[in-house]
Amino acid sequence: MNKYSRFDTKKNVYGKPLNVMLGNFCYFNKNTLHARFVPLGIGMIAQHAKQKFGDGIDVSLFTNADKFLDKAKEKAPDVVGLSIYYWADALNKYVVKRLREMYGRNVIIVLGGPSIDSNINEQKKFLTNSHPYVDAIVINEGEIAFSNVIERALSNKKSAFKDPIDGLSFLSKGNEIVSGRPIGTSMDLSTLGSPYLSGLLDDYLHSDYQPLIQTSRFCPYTCSFCVSGKNRGKLRGFPLEQVEEELRYVSKKYMDRPQHCMHMADENFGILARDVEIAKAIKKCKEDFGYPQKVFFYNDKRFTGTSREVIRILGDMTRFGLTLSLQTENPDALKAINRRNVTEDEILDAMNWAIERNLPTTTELIFGLPYETKKSFVDLMNRCIKRGYDSVYVNMLIIMDGIELNRPEEREKFKINTKFRSLT
Image 1 (cartoon, rainbow, N blue to C red):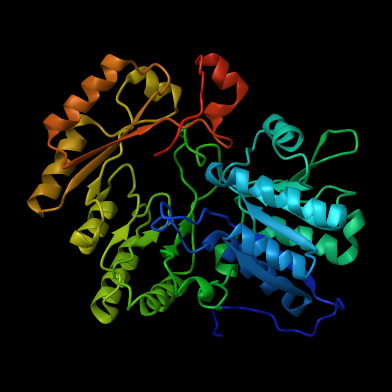
Image 2 (cartoon, rainbow, N blue to C red):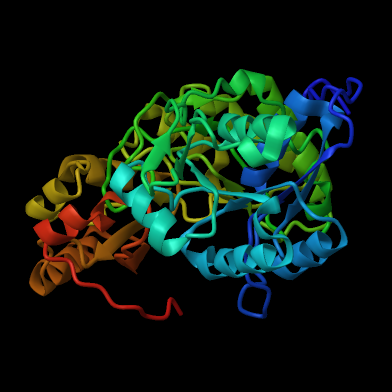
């Protein structure tokens, strides 16, 4: 334990510790072996809860749904928090169903994550149609909101949802949405210790999981195809000293597995001036510990001087070199998705900069956006090839819970029709 763990090990004033179980589920088979990541999100939820309640709670983290249920059979959970994104929706429904079969309404079940919309109509649809057996949903960031649930449960589980809870929404007996004060992007990151440095994530650092590092939160861009585009708030960073200590801690843990790529969870790494110092710290870890050999991140879409310096420092450690994600260049499509791209001159200037430093160049495109046609998309791909990108990644538009394009009015406005298909 060190100064970044910030656990309050005060005497338990609540009697028997509350059993809190957190899940960020993924599938375990030969196809997902290289797509497993340290569950940093629920790690931070647990970190905040332990800082606030100390020995008043026991917290356990799971990525395997079967192991979660096995543990729940051994000891009934009091409060369950599950992280939801479209690839884990079925797993979450299965776990919730099994919990209700085992313990009925004696366990509080809360869902949170990117698939939770900030739109109140979508929240009601989510709670009534998609996940009717869930007690509540967390809106945006979850540390404070989930701790608010625990606080209610410590007082009286049966009356936990009698009154609104800040950061959450739930259904009243009349099937109407009850929402507390919105606090989803107000977390003071300087008050949140590190789940790496406190040891909460140690069980996931000796395995096939790839490490995630988050140094800042919030995306200032409002792309309606992205789960981050719906959020409004302020860009915030974790304490720089804490970030640097995390990097050293994780790098030491992965010294024996240099094949694992370090993934930065920032939505725009290189958007803050201090990211240059973080890039230097990453490079220093490679020199001192032999890890990481490769780093993946999404650089700032504007590709400013800060972004250039970050990529210059990390050089061939960057997994895809310079990435200029265009998605589309159709003017009507860009307007429809609330996006503004870099200009042609900025693209060519950036690519020349990368070529001079022997760095690969990459772009990402999305087909199926509003107003995009077969001709406009083929023309875009041809332009990208002529510009000389080393890699052009083409992704399909995925309409999922938590993005603005999935809201009924947006679907109707752009005549969006969807079908299910395999991702592979």
